[in-house]
Length: 105
Image (cartoon, rainbow, N blue to C red; front, side):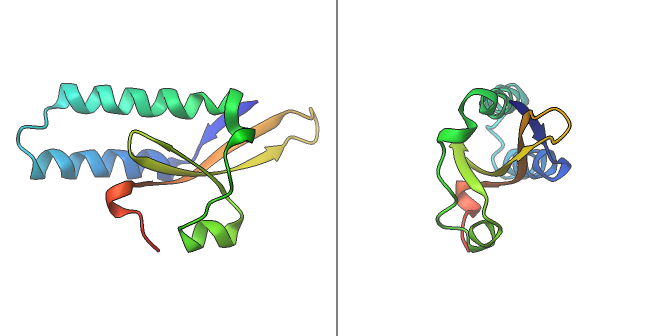
């Protein structure tokens, strides 16, 4: 399975950590880069595990859109699985992200 990440997901992650570092002076760039690295490793792991995660259950916009959801490093990720018609290959397309501190309807 191929994993694709929408630009919006990169923006959500970057903005969250930029604001976090501004609000928490003890949060340094090294720590943030390690957290982001683990996040992207978890997203890449969708190539193996995308089909096991449940449909979104709490964020209404994600439920309405029929997204699946997984959590890594306190981030919730919404994604959809597509099939490339020409090749038959599956794609896990990560569409949205939200930190658990901001995760609400």
